[in-house]
Amino acid sequence: MSRLVARAPGLTESRTESTPPPPSPDEEDPERESSFRALATAQERLAGRDFSTLSPDELAQLVVLMRQLRLATPLRRSRRYEAGSRGRRVDLRTTLRRAQRTGGYPVTLARHRLNLANLLDDAASSGVGAFVVSPPPTADAELNERLEVLVDAQADVCARRGVPFVDCYAPLMGHDQWRTDLAASSVENHPGQAGYGLIAWLVLHNGWADWLQIG
Image (cartoon, rainbow, N blue to C red):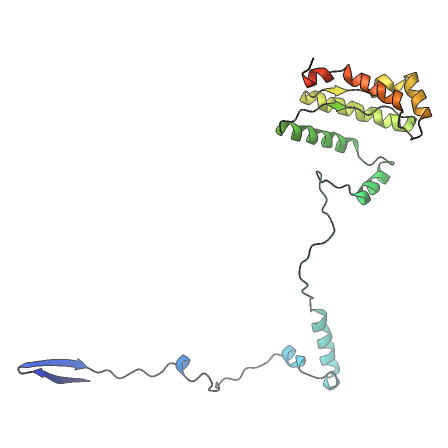
């Protein structure tokens, strides 16, 4: 709809007045009841029912729904540890379980080689020099057979990486003083002062001074 409005003599202005649009449904009164009714599902209707008013079929359906419920408990820190090849704690349960599979020895030969290799590689990458000393023989003949295999594996791993290695097993295996000291020791398979003196002699005369670079 248009009309002319006089502003001054000889001048006119044209103004257009438009009819406002009808209000949208979103702008209507929010408290006004909708003409569409919300329909509840059968499961939702069961939530507000009394058990005594339910039919056998409804009770069976309610049991199924209750079994589908899951308790959403918050996460919390536990005292359990995850298994790791380079952890700082010993997993006693796993160690004992594996020991039963290997006849009492907790670590397989392959795992022993891998552990030593990882240890030497980590030391080399950190700039730390390594000097490996093998375990000495014991008074147990069966244990000595296993130690002999392990010492050979240790020597091979060290030789591949150029790491100094002292074999205390072979020189002391038939040593009379070593056997005497083991027999007189109050701790099983551990020598006394004389036995540790023999180990120290082997270390001192097999590259210890060269490794320390004091010779």
